[in-house]
Amino acid sequence: MRRILIGFLVATTLLVPACKKKTEGGNVVQLGADDPGLVAAAAEAKRRWPEFVVAFNEGRPGRKCAVKYAAPIKGGGDEQIWIMVTALGSGTISGTLGNDPVEDIGLKPGDAVTIQTGDVKDWLFTDGQSMTGGFSIATLQKAAGQRESFTDGPSMTGGSSI
Image 1 (cartoon, helix red, strand yellow):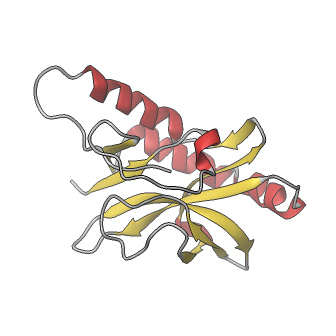
Image 2 (spheres, rainbow, N blue to C red):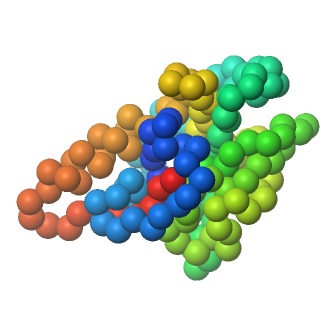
């Protein structure tokens, strides 16, 4: 089964400029690409994409917008990671990498990234204390909680988050 690393975050930590590497027990969990919660979250993000576009185009002061995509890992696999969106084009999204990657994806936080709109796995935007989107976060928090409750056997891989 192809595995992907998925960083999750709380809206208040999405915009922290300094990134720190985390180890096992951090804000990264490893789930299969076919995880039902993640599949449902991606479908919801796709269904509600026009809502994100409207929110981004409003240009509201203080609003931060991010999308998650599957960045290819050198050597195989994907790591789902956040991009802080700076521009929406005709079928493209541009921004800067918002997470410190766990694996080698050839990018570091702040690097410019442009992806195709169809590559979005999740999205969110924040307005101060409120957040809209982030459909995968509940699934990831649940998986992280299960990881913390393991007493025997292998745990999920730790990693990094912003």
